Length: 256
Image (tube, rainbow, N blue to C red):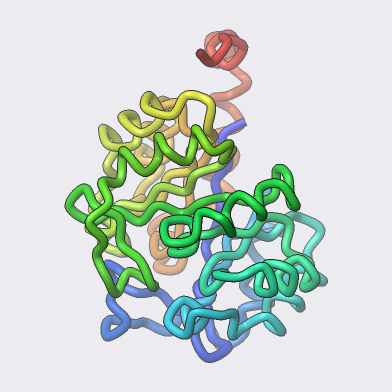
């Protein structure tokens, strides 16, 4: 099944969205993130993606109380990214009820932490690759590393990472459509990894195109908050597509 995952970006306890990861381009969509999360769950979401923007800038989690309340309120899994750069931070995130923790900067700069995390929390660690001009951005997208994003993805697969969240920063928050070709490229490059695409989704056809790339899901943010996409309709369309005989046959093909 291809998951459509609503995003909740937290800043100072509020639900916000950034444009291309720019902290100076912030729009506040709601003062109550817990209510927003509950609404997405009721609309059919099977997972919620939460980003601690304050934590990403500070280098350690800053919004765990809000995250804890979201996880406590929902019956669907919550994944969290932003500021998770130590084992203590990971432990705190899981103690708050998170089902999956997302390493970003730490996965690139601290491979020892990544290896320990993968061993300690099997199946619960994802790595976020935020790509700009083919390179990996770090520290909440504030800095651009010299690491090639595609090469980094291949290295993560070799280390045993099972889930990669791939974000094209240039598309994020722009509602201009996702980088479908880029997503297909990363899926082909790391066939043993579940790839979740993020950035640019603005309409139903974007989601359906991404579902054809072999990706396992997409994170959707601004399009849901502006009303450009209706989550219930999107989930129904994806489920209907997956239920078709040809889709079921394609899903059963082995990944090599």
